[in-house]
Image 1: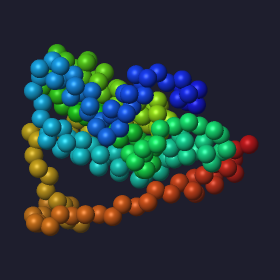
Image 2: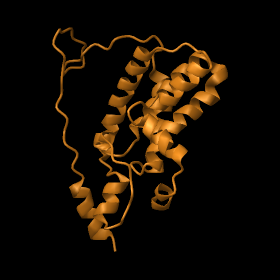
Image 3: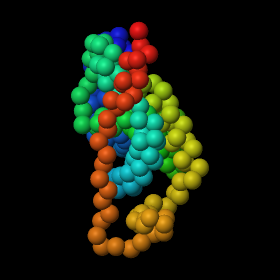
Image 4: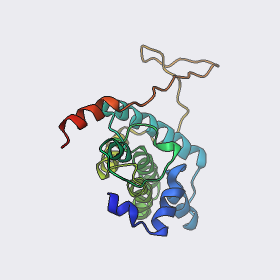
Length: 196
């Protein structure tokens, strides 16, 4: 990974930068170039739903980012700094979100499936190239996206908030949950103990 990051082309760097805040950047670009209809609100709803799925698994596995691990092991690793990498590494939410959006539009435009998947790949691979994900994070994001699509309802609807029992509730007040701060220190201690 370290050698790859040090030898990125300008194109690879721009692919990462273009998808850092917009996981569907290249999907939208492709659909616009092909004059295919797409809706930014639908894409936002899809990515938001996928983000929650990915976050559930991130919180379960709590895998440190490659640069965090390299730092703890005293390795010099170049990486792109971004606010979008302040959560655990596994699985890649960028890969998951882009793949779900690509799958959704591939269901509408099946003759464009291959190109939509390639556009999603630019988002997932960009994170690996940037040094903020392992290749296995990207692959796990894709697998999770493919499995999630089995349960995807293709009519985009507004989600209703859910109470503690799992029942949908109606409220005018948004439900806001506090984010837990990501602290991989315990894992680092374990790795240091076994790393020679």
